[in-house]
Length: 258
Ligand code: MG
Figure (cartoon, rainbow, N blue to C red):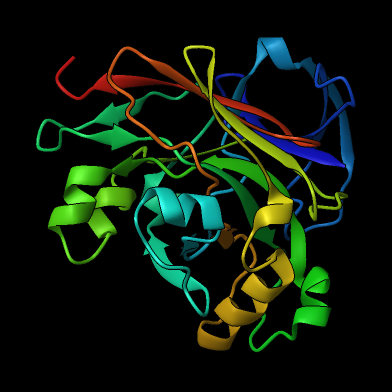
């Protein structure tokens, strides 16, 4: 299933998206918590505004340096265990929402990432049981202010500012994520072109590692790291992140004072 969250100008609703990514069958309630029931209402994707398919219930657990080629391009050794940091849920925005670049930072980058949406409360999940706590997968852009990342010891500002974590266009619930092409484009030019097969720590290991430290709640999200090819993006440009089997997440970048 592909599950989207959208608005037609009224309260946000959830829906099932067809294989072509064109039609939405509206469902009642939040599928993270209630059984999926169709309302009978249908919409065209082109006629609605897609929202982030999930607002993380309590946290985004993000993983740094989880692709060897990206760790190398940043001049880092590979971590011996997953390197985790938090992003607040107020950083999340949806497809086509503008990423707002603040005036107190100068150097911005995109990071194409596979996002894992947790489906139920869990703690100490063994890697072989991880699939049972995963609701599905979506696409994320882990937007980063590189100058703040270098300057601040913590990455809270660099990666957690408002609108710095676009997610979407929808959640795919049935997907083998072991070898998916993951790409990013800036103004149509390919910048990253990797595969999730190159993750240092796979999705199951990441769920195990995160849940060993933190209780995970339904709607929490794990960002799984980015492949090589990160680079500058500035106000006025547009970034598209694509994960094979899910879809394309596109966002314009704008200056805060624009
Ligand atoms: Mg990242």
